[in-house]
Picture 1 (cartoon, rainbow, N blue to C red):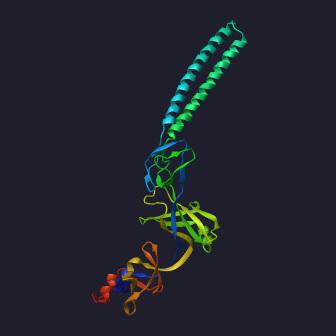
Picture 2 (picture 1 turned 180 degrees about the vertical axis):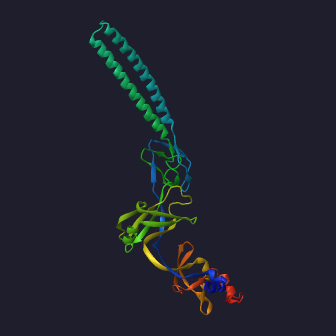
Picture 3 (picture 1 turned 30 degrees about the horizontal axis):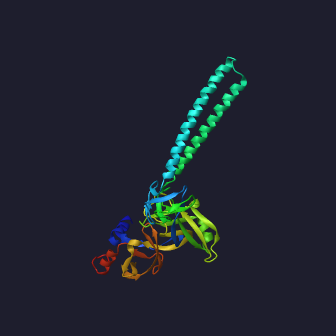
Length: 338
């Protein structure tokens, strides 16, 4: 019996190892939509001090690193105010030091009972007033230096300039918009889900974002933010998919294919390597009882792991050639295994 089995095994054609069965498998089912890249941080910077614009270093569309100088205001008044504040601090410090010395002198005399309590109280009050004046002068200096720093407007984050609102020569006051930008450090993809699919998408809470470089980013759970209301014009629900930081080549306004999981689907699958393309027509070589058959098939999604969905043209259990070249040789009689 063992000899018979061994004989049958040896007699099997070598190309049978290149056959793959048409299988029915369960795969995640996705709803594919176009998502729009958005910046999480978008802001308009406004003037925090008065002055004339003397230099603009960026314009709309420029990519600006965090901390770069983007607009400079005339700072003549602010520098003069800093000098006055510094002089005020020096004078207040000198007055305080003198008042402190006087207080210590009167205190020493008071301990020897040579002056009244009222003299000590007067010296202490003068010392405390001088200290308060010094603190006020130091606060004025801090504010003056802040006003001077405000004449140099710097990028708060790495991003793209959307619009510059001022030009050289214009005079601005606190609150006047200077520049609008968007951050590239934190991005998200926003898509609109049809109302018939929103519950399935919400329950699954899983998405795949296809990046321009071919990479696929998967996001789940709290990384998806669902709007609680529908757009009255389109009856769609917005969903925001938070992207990981550090992705390169992404900019606000770009469209990215985004797949939202809506459940599971049973599909007939075959290896992608079995597919032959004739112009825009897809086909496979099938091993039948009558020999090798070239059969047109309609394909669906690529399911990963080298598998592709078959929509029509094949039945479960049929055998397809993983290597079409082998099937061609057999059909042409190039092997005795036909």
